Image (cartoon, rainbow, N blue to C red):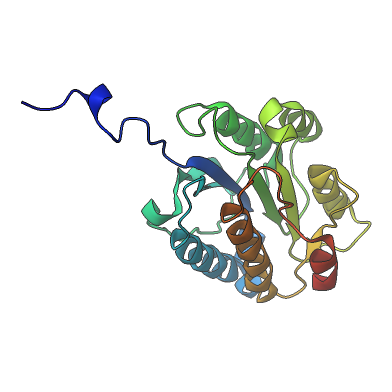
Amino acid sequence: MSLDETDSPFASVQRPRPLPVLVLADVSGSMAEHGKINSLNRAMSTMIRALARERSPRAEITIGVITFGGTGTVLHQKPLPAASVRWTDMAATAGPSGTPMGAAFELAQAVLEDKELIPAQAHPATLVLISDGEPTSAWRAQLDALLGSPQSKRSARLAVAIGPEAGTPAYRVLESFVADGLYPVVRADEADRVLEIFNVLTRSMSMRVNSTRPDEVPVFDPDELADLD
């Protein structure tokens, strides 16, 4: 006779709580230039492999990716535990949608609020926005809605500018996404620096997942981010 599930000695064992990383990646046509999309794909693949090796009884890193540009906005990789992700490279293509960052903010909010993708008991998410240009459609209202959502208010946010310089409209959009004077927008003047920046993200998530209190550990070291610039 089999044991009833509630009588099992493992019935009270809880799975680690999800620790989400959600990347919003610009795949507009300009990202195909100068090796930018190739560097981003390598950085994503390297990060996923590294985080897949992390084991903790308290937290399990999940990774999701939203792409925007060219022909529209897509959930390229739905949030899954890093060890379960089978990475498919992103492709940068020109198209009528240009750089629809506002739609990406809308989709990010929908993903954060979808309890099947990110359960209510998940740890606060880490959101990463990476782009090489200015939005080509409305974005302010969509960003305000995202930043005003309960899940996003708890999140840590990192913005990576591939090219745009401080003070430009494109750069100011990334600053608005971070919305925290403590954390600078990180610039990758050369595409190869994307891997270095994602290595910082990987180290930060590794420290957090191995902490006894993943919700309380700072995700990024402001000094380290400043050094990247």
